[in-house]
Length: 143
Image 1 (cartoon, rainbow, N blue to C red):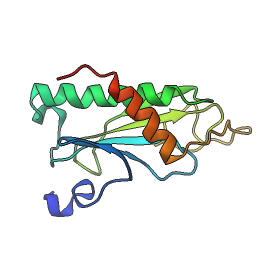
Image 2 (tube, rainbow, N blue to C red; image 1 turned 135 degrees about the vertical axis):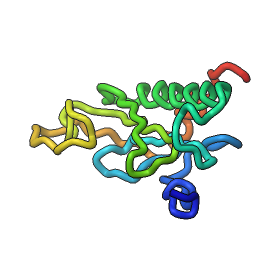
Image 3 (cartoon, rainbow, N blue to C red; image 1 turned 45 degrees about the vertical axis):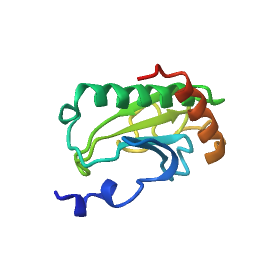
Image 4 (cartoon, rainbow, N blue to C red; image 1 turned 60 degrees about the vertical axis):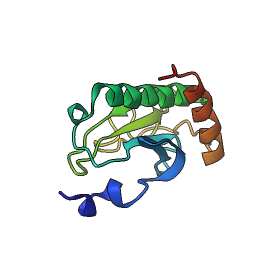
């Protein structure tokens, strides 16, 4: 795959929340999961081990900061972290806030949806995500 055909090289990959020179955080447009973010490496890199150790550390610190931010949202039961890249071989992490009764709970998002009772709905605006993520990022150790 070339960078020309890479979905994450050719687009933001979601609604921008925050970025620095190495990576970006976006909100994924999914009405069932309003607190679903991706942390995407800006350059086209296929695997975590293709990054130098300092870049790996920076990426994971940001992933953990996004996790911490989403945990602060009311109604969140669990946070799922995932890095696949099978369909889009570009380093990125999914950080998803899960709620009891969501379409897939307690199964992964990528499995079959389950018929469940009324889900706990959380209302999360992009602005709230931006504020919450920025507060979590401000607590990161300085590099």
